[in-house]
Image 1 (cartoon, rainbow, N blue to C red):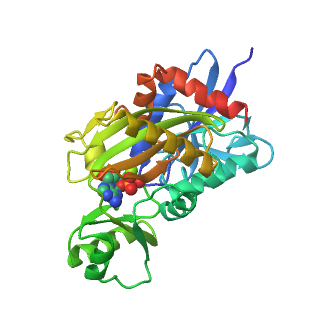
Image 2 (tube, helix red, strand yellow):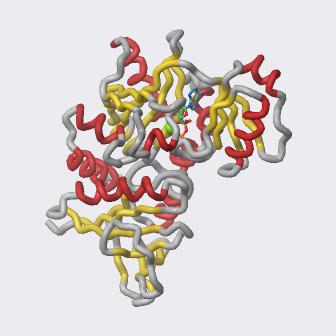
Image 3 (tube, rainbow, N blue to C red):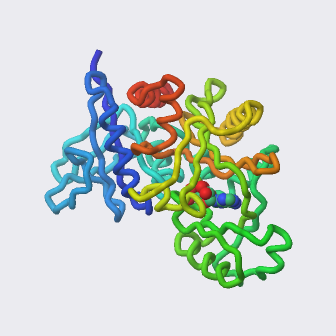
Length: 341
Ligand SMILES: Nc1ncnc2c1ncn2[C@@H]1O[C@H](COP(=O)(O)OP(=O)(O)O)[C@@H](O)[C@H]1O
Ligand SMILES: [Mg+2]
């Protein structure tokens, strides 16, 4: 049997460029080179696509080989040499804007190449926390109470917000990730500053009630009706909340527990909810779905990540490992899932 061609996309224009590189190194190592031929495509911070020999953040000089998609043909032209390459499947190891948000998924759809993971619409909705809340709450999923804030609006009155949502609030961009632009707020001054910070990343921000409880994550693999959920993991932040540094800095003291410290019926409730969330979204392939189980027993959806991290510390592959699906098998199954689409 001839080898299938996999094109790995990594880097990207979002604030999670570095995270993508760490993820891609692992995914690349895990792809079975007996079964697959791998083409590596580095997307630089300005959005240019380069065919590169290894997963690393090389400065691309003017002699680099750029990839130009030829829509409708399944092929990329290597510029300037003019050769063609035709991947059987594209694996986007990208996070955030222009990667996880439906844009790359739309491009590959027009190119006529199957892509690992969710499609245009499910990616776009999951990436937009405002749209995601709307769709999921309309379908009976409990979401964290919130208000939307647009960058052309005045700062809302903190005391009024506090009456509605409580004195501690979380402010975040609607479309970002890795806790970039997320702040915890307990005063009028902080609210103003937090909204400015969130709007650096998005014209739409969310102001949420702060939920005190356990942060829980569950992995989904497969495509409805044949999707399954992993066990429930837990994040114990080392910081005031699970901030960017708490996620990625060497000095982080955050703990990742592969088996959450919760009752079995809550575990079941979360798995059932995650299955439903994935179905309602129209997800395919994979997602990591994050919740907060509040100390009063209420379960709230926090967010859906359609392209979760694959770094050394990432929960998604670890949760599957715990279920007996090792890293290589996981990557293989994601590729196969895309190939049969
Ligand atoms: N409403 C909230 N209540 C409590 N903690 C929150 C809330 N919103 C966000 N957080 C904290 O901030 C982190 C990042 O928020 P999240 O919505 O997951 O954004 P991102 O997509 O950037 O990961 C969460 O992991 C959690 O620690
Ligand atoms: Mg998150």
